[in-house]
Length: 268
Image 1 (cartoon, helix red, strand yellow):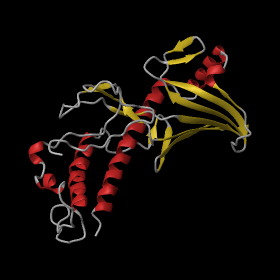
Image 2 (cartoon, helix red, strand yellow):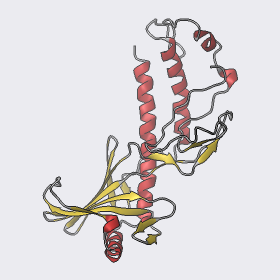
Image 3 (cartoon, one colour):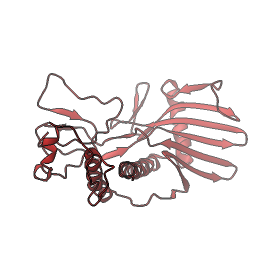
Image 4 (cartoon, one colour):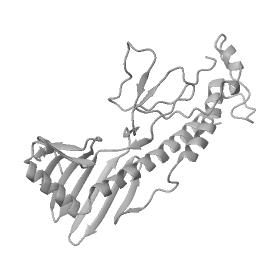
């Protein structure tokens, strides 16, 4: 496999490589690859390893002298050391903010919650960063190119908004729109997010609670609900900050995953 680097691809669920009839260009929505290793740096022993059985070696990483780690484990740890360093260097935010526009940020694994209280109301916004990353723009990549360039990685998760007053909750399910904005019926809006679903209930939400899809709401009612959310502080500008928060947190979670794989592989 001389000259060909295996890279880590993180491709959204509905993103496909196109097309099977074209062998020159591939449309790629997302890639986490960092092409920072040249062919000259590839250990020549990797070439020979393809024609013989792999045996445990007496090194792992750079200085290990034990006989517990295989060649594959050693190569993985060595690669991850460089990959983790490069990803940390690419981080835009080293520390995740604890507050955004008056909303307190709480982190629990891949789950993120923003909440605030005003008078007798509590507003909670929640989302999960898993499977939310895609490139900012499509990129056409030549498979023969050793160093392709990709768009900026962004995390734009679906999110819920719960506005609680007493025992009642007015709930919204929302998602980010594409570059053309949101649409409702025959009208198009210049919003960076849209209402996918609306519901109201008492106590806990369950399958018996009725909910209506945002795209079947009366257009004027939809506008009024968007104005209502903006009045509560959930404007287009605020939702763009949610995307920035999600992008930074997802990236830090990705780095933690790489570090976890490295420690797991390099365990004694």
